[in-house]
Image 1 (cartoon, helix red, strand yellow):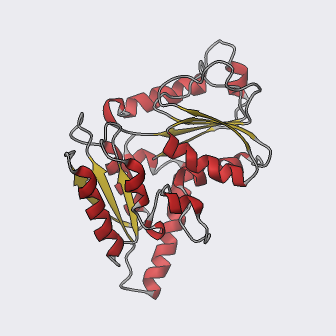
Image 2 (cartoon, rainbow, N blue to C red):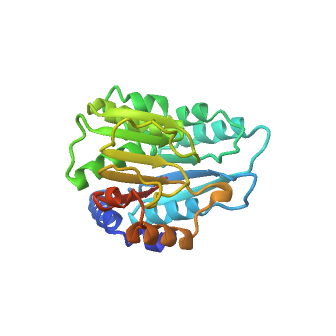
Length: 274
């Protein structure tokens, strides 16, 4: 999906306008202040480019945040190279946030990479110390914050809500932590491409969160009140504008099957790019 289309989505455009206004006010008070996020893009071995970095950069800059895009080729010593880069960015007072994108075929120890980012600069909020957030001052995990926002927009309460989460561990771990803290009832399935195994959800969930490439549609949607698709843009499964438009059209139109009733009662679908 082109960045220009994402910026037009009401849920994003409203927040982006708020952020831009806040940064403009700060600029008047502190003329030399310019928020800066360093985005480290580790290029997948199967592709030469990744459109997600372009999207993230566009959204940040539209919000009034400068973005320094740093690319890193896959190499045998890529982990040490990344740790060196992160160390330098951690100590740079002009860098206020750090984002890193690792491909699925990365040979790195991803946990050590994410944990190396200072919590106060961890934009994604998925480092171990960021997730613990003992001081309460760390940036919240983006996917987790988006999930809570989804409940709020739908007018639902998180406490005692049944939530099913399917996807990568490092993503749904952050979501599960914040939902546990809000007393939600969770079912987790660590997977990227498979459908939830039969019997995973004994009862219909109030909320279903998918952190996988496969889109929700009227055939595989579960009878939940809220559906949230956290979309990645990596590797051979790179989303195209046409794919997203086809998915949205299929979901909105629906098909004649047993899930139509569940789909028609859904509060909505929230898309986030991560």
